Image 1 (cartoon, rainbow over the protein chains, first blue to last red):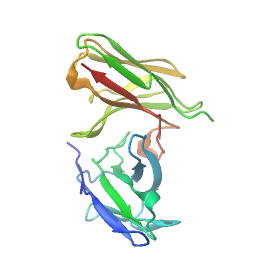
Image 2: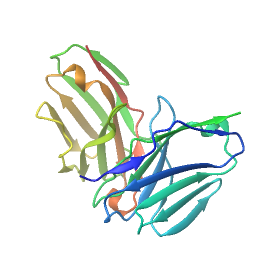
Image 3: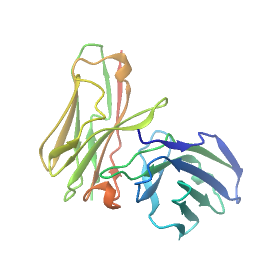
Length: 109
Length: 116
């Protein structure tokens, strides 16, 4: 059973702050790690993915991966109210993705 | 690019009825995925296809669920007979290849199913 653990939240941060979203996974064979954002009532959409240990930056978003610790995180800098959503962590298996239940983020204006 | 298309967007049915959900993947994509999302269990993979062939259906909850992909541009997920516990949002997603090789999955808008 491949498990993906995320703090369900809600995580509340003030506008302009850094939001830190964390994810741990059980499958050591996972090679790629995807972060999806899902607005209420909408479908998941990809924010970014990472496959190498370390940091990967894309605009206000930074993904961090530590395969030895089986840990992946997403940092959102200068958080905006429009970032309020559920963030899903998805490590890859051999042929598909395994989604966590997500962390609900609320950015307070 | 029209994205992944799903129909219907909403479905309300009575217990025991047959339900058919439809999906048209993005043109040129070779993999198609069916997911179910509930508050309690999150996003669960039900089945996925590659080049129209089912690769893994281990997520299909029971024999009441079946999925087909007769061609590269169409897939169906059928529930017969439906039960109230099947109420959920069903998403279809497609990708160029297999997600294990860093392929992004693009999700359709989902079908909200309510079984009374």
